[in-house]
Length: 123
Image 1 (cartoon, rainbow, N blue to C red):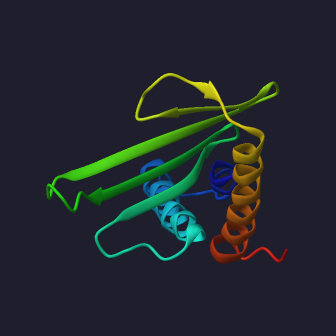
Image 2 (cartoon, one colour):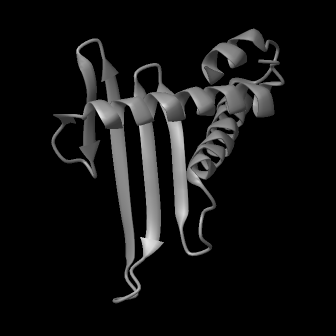
């Protein structure tokens, strides 16, 4: 989605485009992480669209019992045959119908908010 937007922009330095693209991705990821409720102060949560078929959920937190910093990244690959999920570089497996429905709902909200908040689109 962002790459299409950047292709419209002309006359800028390619490095500026890359920096701008990364900045938008970071902003979208933070906004996406907030779709699921407030993010506690000791956590970092991101949810974003990596490309037309890939959604990423990333969360970091401090384990209260050990004080150790933890992280989990979940990658969703949307395919014609269904949605596959892998966590923290593990093996892929097909998600349940309920999880697929939740992902689709979150993706729709993410797209609507991104278009509205970052690109000024009226939906």
